[in-house]
Length: 429
Length: 159
Image (tube, rainbow over all chains, first blue to last red):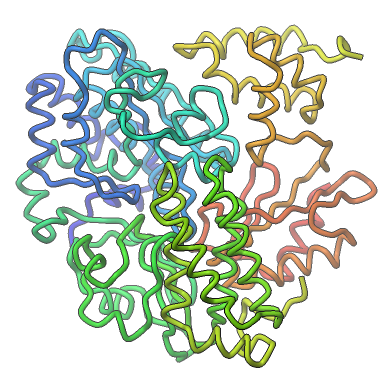
């Protein structure tokens, strides 16, 4: 499999502009500024089939195309580096090891919509990543890739690094924009979409780190080469972050459409200590869990995961072996969402806490008859009833854990105790 | 009391630079709050009122922001803020044992600060270090692939 996103990360000093340029870096930006109009650039990215890598999978070129060309308002591009989806750590790798690819991608996106101010919104906890990016931005500015009259093209672009302060919801694009406007990270009702009414009410594009880091290669090698990789609706390569009970955890670049089971077995080394696989969350904690036997025939692309009743999401693969208590795992995820709900919409604000409480009492032997149906009811009432996708992200995994491992939940309630021994169990709170 | 909280000349200069970086002043809210937290140690009600005046926004707006984000503190915290990730990938790798080891070593519970003001212990949600779990963040630094022994050795080095 060809490395597109991870092509530089094993090279010593890959974070420096010297190494990045020696490996062809910033040629994509030079090409768009010298040879392409913004319209041609948008068409090229549409032709590549690139879809947003933050989780939603929306076609990137189409997203850019929604920005009005004739708006008198300033336009903004924001690189979403607020990586917070549990099980996902691919953007952190790109930021720390290949910051110039992220910067170059951001500048290419800015040129596509004729924006003159771009932001990188990085989660506050990524202190080291922010230092790496800050240094890289200074290097890029000194080399003339940023600022006034970039490479003599008469195009001006300013890039501002902005640190978040600890809130998962700021990874949601409108929550991010509220945060960048100096407020709480409360998502906004869509429509209107950020493409027309984004930052400060101005046309704005928000793209994920991985999406943007894909752009330099696509521009340099051509959309058709990128589109030749993958499946009909999932083009190119995708980064998968693999964690949990797996022999070789880490970030892997995979051609879209690769067999999932083979990936886990051959590339990641399978489940350690000869234990059996119990379940896998394929796309970050927001996505429905799959039982081991459901992995047969799944390929790693948007369509295949969807057909299996889950989603590719951020590509955060969390592997659980037979020792895992699924009640405790479900409780852990419910607790995450209860902690991170922004509090704006009642179904999510109240529902996430109720789901967390009920999962907790089932795990600790205080579950009652009807508790599982109560969680399913709460989950069903959150689903689709909130301003942003966070509600669905909390509701989907809760329902999936119960539906897929119902017998284990029932047993907890019947026997009034946790019936599974695992690394996540049995430490008193 | 109200006027006791004030930026140093150096921070005031930095404040001007930060605000000047952004297309609108209110966008500078988080970096200005970081600046205030660094100077004052934590964001007291007086500090929040001071930032509101500097930023030309109502106090309630700043208060809402400070209470929304986990990295902004309204109470004093220890010199070393230990934040152990508790989310699923870390939990699968034994994060609870790490927290238990820290509690036993320091004699404090989650959310508490040691009597000498050296450590505050918190449990936090996913820090995007799942491939090197279990892990903790202490102030700005990540410590990964922890076990009960290594976490003790790390804490011993933090004075």
